[in-house]
Image (cartoon, rainbow, N blue to C red; front, top):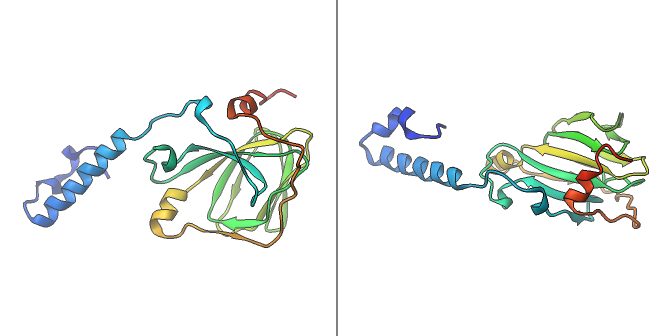
Length: 183
């Protein structure tokens, strides 16, 4: 879909059908232009998600006012010496910023450290284990908006529980982000 109507020849249609489509597209273009373009680090809210055993902070999501249609980006902070619940969903890309550990992807162990990127395919059972003394901080990139639109947004849990480190509480996003590359 174009960002402006000048390239859309069907806007020239005279029927009620074409006119209503053109109005929907114009309204959509205006909504996207008015949407959020950036978020400041101090505005990222990190919250505990007990079901998954992770601290989460949305970075680009519709809930924050972005008009993203395809992908969403979240920050996940896993406490030291913990692990997430085993789950599966549609594909995701994980970029490791700090901490060390491994993930089990359909029982295949993938070790990771800062700078590593991991692709989790659609429907792959996975669980993240943090082995370092410091928390793991990752960016998770997922196609949630388009999955929601297509009616395919789902997450399935295997039935286990996360291993929680009750002694760890994440700081603000900026505090945790500032620790990248420092030990």
